[in-house]
Image 1: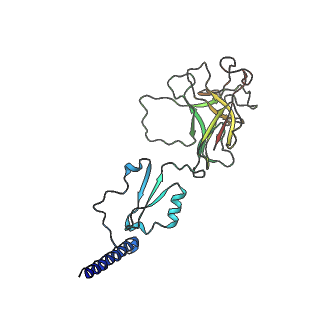
Image 2 (image 1 turned 60 degrees about the horizontal axis):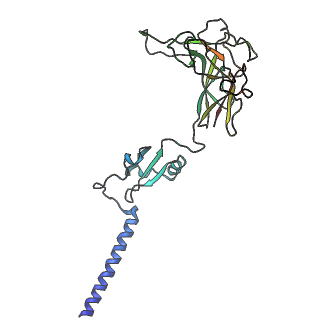
Length: 284
């Protein structure tokens, strides 16, 4: 009797093991499972888990559209493709806010001061003329603006009070540049350097560090030290263009060369008094 009971128990255990193995195989082969309920489960991934990412969820209906190509594209852009669960056959694509892969940058935008065009290889977004606050007025903007040729307006009402924008002129005395520029209005071009991620402006240099691309070089120019308006310096191309027919002396915002005073904190020798400070614009 005991032998019969032992044999029966042994057969029962074997049958249970086979049944369990079959269930596991059925679950692993989730292509044949029609529905798995997740109503009682908490979300697999929450926005708190990825505060620095944008998450796009793909539901069951769209899951079939998640192809190998899409997953490869997500991987190229530092994305992550992860299975949500066996039963859903869906994916979650998580893409970083900032893609830092070497060839992923769409480009760097910069202004080429003193020119009407961009370098070869860069794309011109627009060209125009420089404006800014009047050289002898306080309270105006403290930087140069590259104004487009075709401005657009929203209102026909005159402002109650305002900060004024004037045209810009070279104040060079026709020196340094080697061409006539005195009192001419200053042009500008806004350029896109493709496949770059960083811009660097170096004062007192005309060449870029190794591995960087030179966009242009020239002279650092700003407002005159004795005027009321203090303007942030900009790098003006070493071969500047002028606006034809604009040689009348109307002032406005002005471009003066910058120079050092060696011996007052800057070493004489490498820095020379009465020399116009140069500059270079680099991208990488």
